[in-house]
Length: 262
Image 1 (cartoon, rainbow, N blue to C red):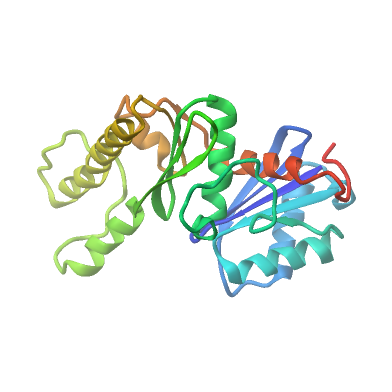
Image 2 (cartoon, helix red, strand yellow):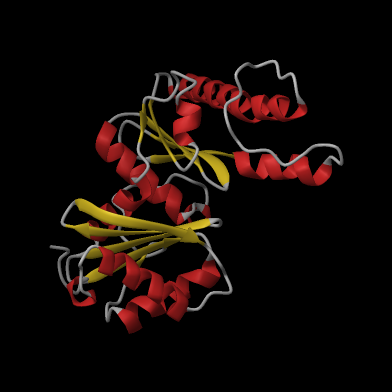
């Protein structure tokens, strides 16, 4: 079996694959102060609840945008699972040309998202990832990573309103009944939800204009279902896109590696 680890700024998602099937996954907070022993206990819990012994995990791959946690999880893999993980970064085969001016600037999560999304669509594709930041990643019809857009995430925007405006409360990010809010809370919710719907629609339209054709748009991330339900600009939702992209990158680097995922 293969362990896939997606380390984000807010959450870390750990998946267990049996071949190409995701058999279980676990979402935990990305705590920079936690040790490999603390994270190791959580990984063991994930495996145990599926009746998977640690000895059946034959390999692992890590995609991380939090450098301090990369080595924590790499050490976890080596000490708790006795596997040397693939770490997505320079020197790792992705099979996708990165046309960023400086390819090293592109986060591992954005690369693996692009790989998984293009494998599904096989055409011009945009990935919208509703994470700590909301990112748009654009892939050409030839499977090239062209670049993208980064904006503050919905959660960050909500927190900023609460932190910087004395009379504005902290609100749940949820769809209000109408666009015109009749309370401060519903007015804020309208701005957060419908405002981001408009942002997605506007950016997808502009990206399509630059590409010269309407791309296939795939959304991922925790708030993807909420935003996608309000717009036709998003064609599909895949909550496990990043984990599957990690699996695909692992497959492309398995030759000469330790073993297979089956």
